[in-house]
Length: 266
Image 1 (cartoon, rainbow, N blue to C red):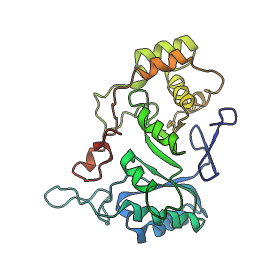
Image 2: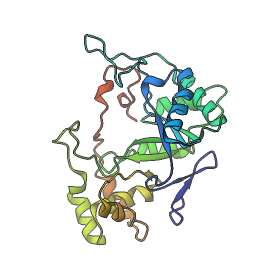
Image 3: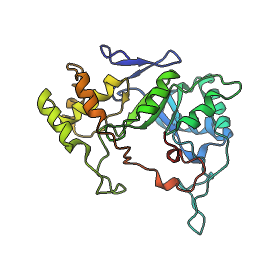
């Protein structure tokens, strides 16, 4: 990771910004489009809508194939999740074809656990490794084991919810507010920064690519001012100690799915 020039070289030779996407264009393949014959047409349709020739990054959003149809998350009349039995390796082969067709510069995955990543990595005839695994990652869920696994396989770990989650209606309103954590607040005071800047800098020093979502102009400007200071190794360990394996998005809407990624330790 090049903190000076603010980018990371991926395992396919392309580059990704280490903080936010900026003009970088990613696209995620939703679970109802995992059938191999649907993967490329889905991307082509998206490209036509946004008037682009290609995306920088095409991701499998979750390793949980669902029955194709109009519903984002389909259920039967009894409220049971309608999952599909598509082999994730077959979906990955279709992703590889999108890259070969020039529709995506890079291809990766999101919300995969180690076992599911290994399924792709060990696939006979694998042409391209995933360039990244995009997962929820913050001081309350620091993903240290997943980070080490990804680094050992030259796969970038991309963090979403790096500042905790927005207080959206779907979220448990009793969930802890990351940026109000006393440890982060104390470190913010020590470094004369905001708790958000401390949380972002923590990830960057670990070699994690960070997605920092905000619609507030002041916070957006504040969030990018994380390259002119450094946390000590002691303070990094202190933040490591905040880990409690807490997820803001436990993906409970996939409960009952045999491929639910959060059923494994990591």
